[in-house]
Image (cartoon, rainbow, N blue to C red; front, side, top):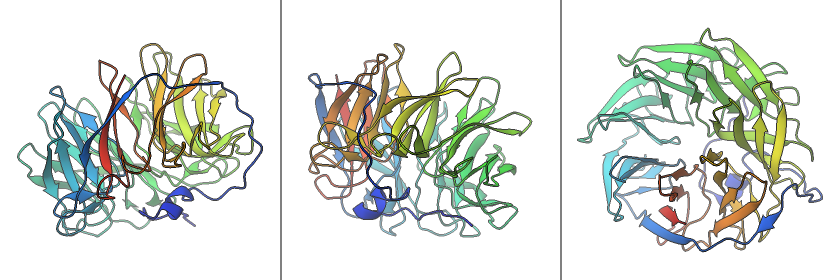
Length: 397
């Protein structure tokens, strides 16, 4: 039976979406240092319709510094948007979903091709009302590439974004439907043909319910991802799907105080093939972890989040790496106002809170962060800001 939860903009449901856990004694594996001088800027506050509202996902950036993403709600119809924010903070709604055949309520973000076309998924709408894979061109014209049919033969209601290969094929996941109703991994070709690559079965040898996540594609065409459930303890897995569509569980999250549980976000990979990410719960502080898994499947917990005023809590968006092996990400809660944080975890294991959200500047960042060549970080918050509908932000070192 699937345990998929509908995305919600309720603070209580957001912070317990991965399951409520009792607090454990806090034992930190990393030291803390005070944040150095950072300049935080709200580039855009999402307003009332016809503007979008409540972006779950993070952003992509083009060579000119324009940022692109999705909002879950807002627009005239209430079914969300695809938007652009330029470097000066001017927003343009590129497309407003109607919730009909064109799709509605995108949870995941977008990917961009060399011609400036954007691709993503919607949770609802499409020809069968089970969600869709869409394309929006530079002129704002939307095309539905594929409508999910649901049932046992197809996925439904995708929560995550897409990854695109060199041939233009798109890959993603759905958190439910499929052969065991535990979600799927799919491929959509440029011509719109879909192929179901894997149906999650749950249990000890497979994952279940990939939520708020996208896939990582290596140079050989293998896919990597995480699930919120399944595995040896039913607390989520990190997996590899080979080019022959064989799924291997690389790590089953064990929970408790020594491991994380309920993994979300997109795995990051270094040149040696090590994978990195976050769990939203468990660990010694019960507030999630940053983890590393080697190519041979050995896991190391790099940081245990403790919450409170000096640490973040409940990361959803995963992490990114720089050339020096430092990690960057955000947490949906924690910090002095418990409105979430932006953090750096350096290659020596020291965690720095780069910014703590206070509500007026945004709250509850769900999507991951991106980083430009100058070291600037960009992202979104799901809530608050001037109008309570979330923001697009920039953090300059």
